[in-house]
Length: 338
Ligand code: ADP
Ligand code: F6P
Image (cartoon, rainbow, N blue to C red; front, side, top):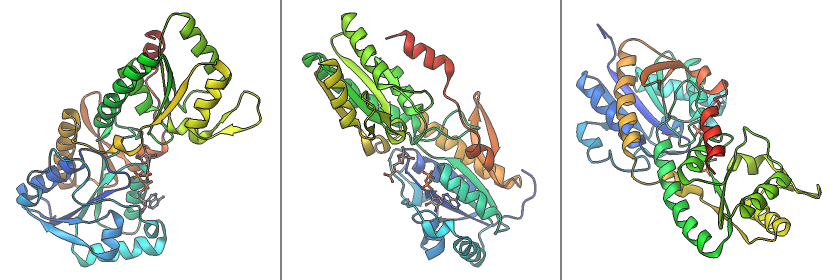
């Protein structure tokens, strides 16, 4: 970080919100101010740049937000930014507001947008991985993932109590878009009898056999964690007549085939809320400061990340075009410990 000519930076949070986004906003704001930069926070992601809805931030603007879920800058999906004209207008507005660097905190879609912005705007663009899905390649973890795991686990532990009491099968659908990171994490964390992830093929027939084996082995309850991506892809019913795209329908199919009571619980958006876990606060704060320092060093078109406990910069395209694999060893552990 030697001489730099930067004067003013902008921040957006975009796409699915994630616990820890506020901690990242706070870290970027305070680090930028520490280095003598002005800070502008745009509201509702790319939409705020298009509509010029923003506030000038000072150190106090980000007081008492570190521990809060959601994002004080709000979030949105912005279809207009997907068009060339939309991005040209964003670039024009950023020029007019004399923004030198834009920090984009979001998931893969937001970072695709960030990449596209670099093609029409000559300012620097730096991304921060903000998504509960943990599906961005180039970083071991994303901001929000740890909290989502804790939140899901808290609920699943409660479901386990009633599952045991009634000796039932529970199918628990978790978020994660087309990736199985949340399912694998909570599956390990709650001792699920089975996890269904989009990265591995699932046959309903095998599932029925697994449930029957589990019952025969003396297990009273059975928790099956299913990633939403598996449901989105669809599962063929045993008779091959329908493709199941709904956890409740899948639970009914399992009940019919096993003769055991089976219920579905879709955890949904509770996984996105709540006070960030310690690891998300620490990750967001560290990456926020690192992102500003990367900008001061002249970087652009990169996402900040952490790999093997070392901070790193990942070219945008790498973050979303490369498939991030699930940890094979954790998959093995999950299967072994049931
Ligand atoms: P996330 O960042 O959580 O993956 P989305 O995929 O919905 O969420 O993306 C958030 C926003 O990023 C979109 O509403 C859009 O404004 C922008 N975006 C996503 N993909 C692109 C793209 N290919 N080109 C330009 N902008 C994009
Ligand atoms: O990317 C975060 C996420 O919560 C995904 O896990 C989920 O598929 C999606 O966003 C839900 O989006 P929405 O809030 O638009 O329903």
